[in-house]
Image (cartoon, rainbow, N blue to C red; front, side, top):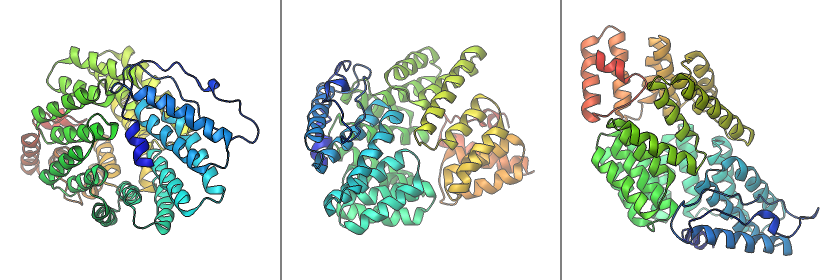
Length: 439
């Protein structure tokens, strides 16, 4: 039922949602609490999807209200809302209510299949909220019920990656792809290959993920977006542009592809077009990353007032996410370092992440960057080594390694590494890239 449900969500409709939750039967004290289906921006996705979501929501709410013991209807509703959260970006509204809905299923003596499904969904939401240890615990409970279904291993891959347990993540990915080689398993194989420095293999696996999906489906175009970003990280800008364009052709007004195109335009010096596109993406969904990019560009233009206003809005968005249970330490660290120029405050937030997942390479990359900007080259080097322990070929990490070597007195070696980084990606952009170019 879950795969059928997700497939149905692809038949999207353009337009603004006018039907509201108050059209559902009134809630009584014995009713299950159900999140309202929010209005969202017109035009996201292909024709038919929005109308399908509205129709399914009404139908499932009616079923849950009519029979509170219909746990399958409750699960279907939770999964519908999970997908809507991905599409709309309204995570703070949907995820707390979805978790409550799923917990009521687990609490009401479901059969093993229902409990398994509820736990898989719960673990997926916990991952989206960056509650990685909790997600791993929930997924581990689920796999005891059914060790022969692929989706739960996907959650275990993701949780172990975020916790920095990469060897365990590889084991879980191998199990997942052996059970069901599909868009979900291929995309995770791609992530892991990139982590281990296998760039060509990562690209090939993400191509398989895209080809395994249904064109226009949010999951498919997310995979295509990630393929484009893979190309972009390693300097293949024309290939990246093609993937972003294909995503927009298959899924009109896909906000993440629009934002990715904005980033490409900025890299190539077309700032006016970049500004137009990022404004378009921001108008579609409230994605923090879009606002961070816009604020960064305003700061680079010298628009202190505009950048400051956007930064204030970003901090409010992060606080709202935190209130709904979303762990946002690295996001705060980026804002304080890149937008507010406060490496000490950035360090405080990055260290909160480090205390919970000290082996994660992205956390260590963030700390290495912050310590570098703070002038603590020794600690920058220590965290950089942790970030590079999987032999990643990230040009950004190579560039930072070159700067740290140069600051440590090995200027010639540092310059060689910096040249290597910009050879791998001529368009490399980072908080220390201008300094590296000047070395």
